[in-house]
Length: 259
Image 1 (cartoon, rainbow, N blue to C red):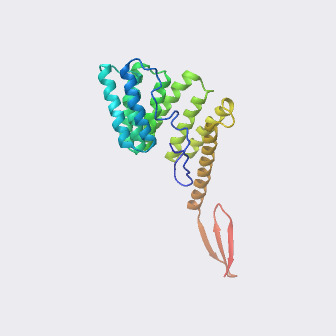
Image 2 (cartoon, rainbow, N blue to C red):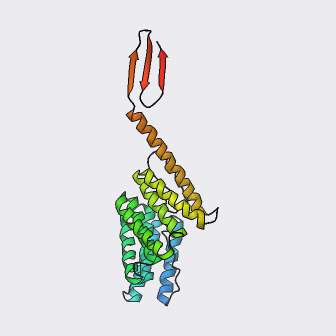
Image 3 (cartoon, one colour):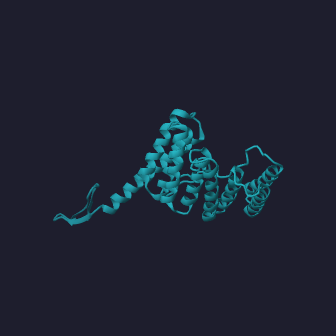
């Protein structure tokens, strides 16, 4: 996902941490049946098509993998099912169809809440994925709601002083940045940096991303203040008896020119 995107001085970053973990997951659990091995193999083909930008083919393979999983599992929903839904949501996310992505991420979240409960990393990851999809749609309040839920779970699991928790701070800051709430964004980016400085290596990619985010948010605040000053400034043009025109700008410098 792109690093903070707003008006003004936004820059695009290919390596971001806003999603906590990659939206696109591989089936890393040990298969318990031939069916799971087969559906996993089909999913892997879907992954390869995503890497090549063949999203239509990727959707086809991931739908086939999900259908096979459902058939052989007798409709039983488990972590494998959630991953299949995640894969479909991730492909739609890649095509820009954030509303379709949110639908599949919601399905994965519902399964994980049922299978793992609230206080589980997989559940937190699902909260973040739903939040990302809403942010892409511009529904920032709903996005923040889900990202805060993810942060709450991570703090319970890992405490405040952990890289995963720092990522949640960053993610929330990213949404505020998109909203144009640069002060709020900067505050969360700084929280992320405080934790990362204590728990991550100096050259960790998360720290580099957060540093860039702090710079962008700071620049946006400066630009906003300049524009506000320009908008609020009142110019008075006064002709003196000596023929000196004075351009008096409230809150700024006084420019004097001679006719």
